Image (tube, rainbow, N blue to C red; front, top):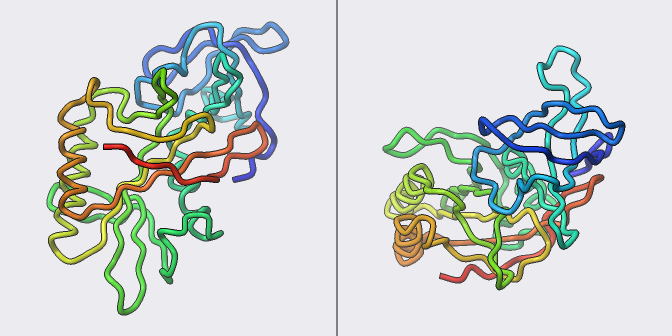
Length: 235
């Protein structure tokens, strides 16, 4: 995904109220920016961090700038915009990067399904093949061993999505939990049992029942974010 115009740097003062953050621009001006991430943003929201912003170029918006990327102390850039992951995964399917999800004629987004009033992120369909339901999770956190983990906060919604995927498998469909890791400095991903044990146990149950767990990491820059490499999911 090309980012036009490219992102520009600022310094984070603090994040608050989930969707807001105060930053200092290069000019020295302090402004409030939109934070498009509902999670804990573990390791991505340290005061004093260098962050990268997008100018929405929309004069009617209350907050002109959107916080898109954080620079870790190691220099690694981390994509924090949760709303981009569906587009990133869709692009990577279309261009052939995600080899596991090839061979489908159509890709639909945000399709209502299931027994718990859910919407699937991507529904892949092809005549004479089972439908493929793809639930996508944005991953930004990593541990000291260099392994990404999900979730970084208790996620009852995430557990619900796993239940829905298991139900699709029982009905004869293909179901995938896809971890979109928006950072390039990790070698694997695991469930964060220390954060949400229920999610970890449900993920293991889902995989045992036939839900596929796929993970890819991204290359992140101020000009482009794209998925580049598969990661093992360690359960």
